[in-house]
Image (cartoon, rainbow, N blue to C red; front, side):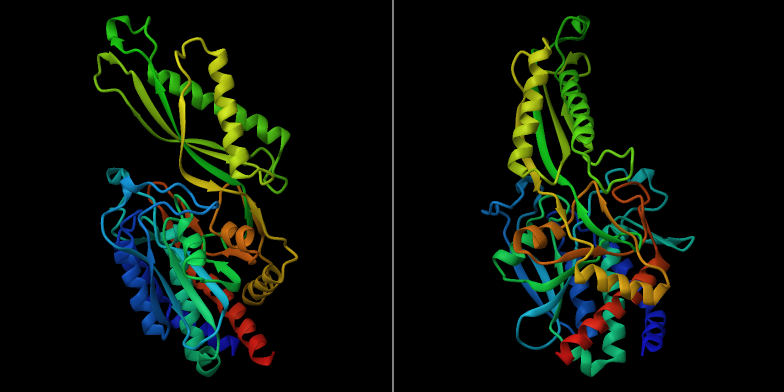
Length: 423
């Protein structure tokens, strides 16, 4: 049966690649995800799964675990997420998860090919979202189609869902909303994030903040005498960078590679100034801060505010304290034990497919796995394709890694199906 599964996966690989290309052609930046979800729904229907639209609000999510919604980035109109599942009744035993939202591609002139026009080169597919993480939908569709063709009776008996969420890249509210408002849970969750065919079992906490700095503006001829809001903002950023490096030395992430800072501070966006010959009086810096798993998001916010306040006290150029506003992620760190049956059995499926055990690791980033694991006690692990330049120029995914991951996933699902049938 496994040989037949591999054969069907190989024979359907081109269809999966074309499905991925269709997803990439549907730009799905935050607030504009619906056309890509329609592509996903059509593919799931062709496999034999039933699709259900899950209404998603454009307003803040009133929950302690929610991130801060950014309504200015949202198009007007109804939004939804999508759950595809096998026919039948009863609770889901297993849930596949993927996020349909992608980060923007604001510099298309730097790309070798247009970011939302998929292009194959050198065994890779290039385009925004090919790796992070529309490749996961291709993996899931390929594995599910193989199981539906090879074991149709067994496939139809199982309670399995494939959930496409939104806002994973900025708040995490998509996965959270699917649980608290729609009750979409399962005994286990596999998130098909790009992991280089390894098992990502954990991540650090992540906080998004905006830092607003003000200064008295002045003519450029007196630039050496006037405070410059942008320069003051950069002092805040560099101060937070030093703070995070100290944090990494005092509270290291034990599973990170030596020399890496798991709590990286990233300056993502800057808005400042209105005239070239005027020293800017305002500056807004959008900053991403990592923090230890031992902290709650509330603790992280307090520590970040304290670090900024201490910096201002030692810098005489600040006329008033910067204003710090939460803007997106309030994500706590998470870690699934490598002794978990989910990790054990997915590792065994990978070994059976490829002859080697996958690497289990954590990263200085976050995924929706934290919502399932920390918030609801549901084991969740990430497994997926080999991606390059995620969030960057010329993002791509290795096409053969999609096939390789599908072979692992199909074996894992088959083992779960067989176990449920025998129990």
